[in-house]
Length: 588
Ligand code: PEP
Ligand code: MG
Image 1 (tube, rainbow, N blue to C red):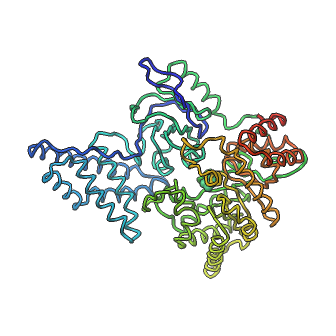
Image 2: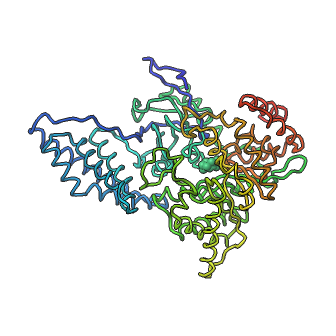
Image 3: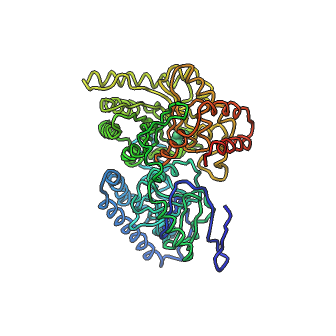
């Protein structure tokens, strides 16, 4: 991540970060600051400053109110109409007479600056809500935080805040940005994303990929020093970010952009309807991962056998709350119908961790806190609602239901209990569904790997979530580029677990898939094939090239290679072995 080029005044202009979502973007920067900077405590010089300070505060309230009304009016379409409700709640907070009166009292009595007074009063309100047991009250914490950020930033003269849709196309530069933030920006206006934080498998990176937004994460660029409006060039293939590129660089980026506009090269066109089968006729299921139901047609166009992972949490993130049973059933039914008979593997909500849940207290260690199935079982109504919606949609096409972050058979048994209850509830309502709908699990915790024989017996299928399995195995935060590195996924600890999961699945006669990012890595796929994986679920754009690769190799050869690969004890050796193998196979 060293700066490579510097400007005339020695200013850094070029960075290399982690390429997170392919594509080229060129456009003006808009700088977002996700971190709320606590303003330094400032006192007024005396009583004579009070009227001016009160006016400054009232002006900030009026401006923020206006912004929120404008955003609400702009809301349209599925994502934005849900946001309208969020903006309503935020306007109510701006209008809260008790908060406004208390802030004014502090300005008048203690002569403290408006931003400090507002921060103090709202901070007290947040703390009392965090202690409340009423879930509705607790849900307000995020809205209060959003209003606090807006008003304090307005008072400090900071222009952009998150949750503020972009007015015109721009490249978003942020210290950090969450999937919910991306959803709340106007998607058609986000040309590219550059963040200081984040790793290649962070959910932000995955969402950017799904939305086709070029992104580079883990860039050692202090976004606070960049002025909005400066031209930025982003290369989501190589991870290069250039501030104020010169004419030759602009031309180079424009050319590269034109070259990469075609969805996939012609040479893959003829593969769409051919099976993902090796030369010696070993057939694999080649699936695609999606984050939004609307992506289903792309999956078919790419020639995938179906969807191997539908991350439903975006249904939650775009609304800021759990969707109703009907809303969910409609999305699942529409998505499976769009797949025209091909299977749709739907993961139940994997909320928590970096896919933060509005209204929940910020945990000290979110990746180890309430998330995935643990969260769903803590609030079983949300799980039952989703299971009923999924079952009801199964009448429209083959749906497979998958539980995230399972750590052992007890959790699976609890979920199976809710699964049976959901079936009984639909039957009693006379709603048609497919009784044979499979219920499987994601294997993405080392604990699940330890308990894999019991889990494989009870589940209908297994899908390895290598992104989380790696994070929890190596104790490396997948979203933190200072500790996570793309080469981590060569760690033998991951591969030996994958091998044992595949074996256990096959002993129990259950199919095993991989839906983590390693299933998109061309160097890793030969090894996964050789280990006997039944199904791969990769990014839709990668389907043609992976299919072409699968069709060019021999399974018998890969089986032998995988056996040898498993004996290697270092990342370096594993990587070297796989690259040699790929070279021998003619894979680039
Ligand atoms: C994984 O962990 O590998 C996975 C596919 O799930 P997610 O990336 O959504 O956590
Ligand atoms: Mg995961």
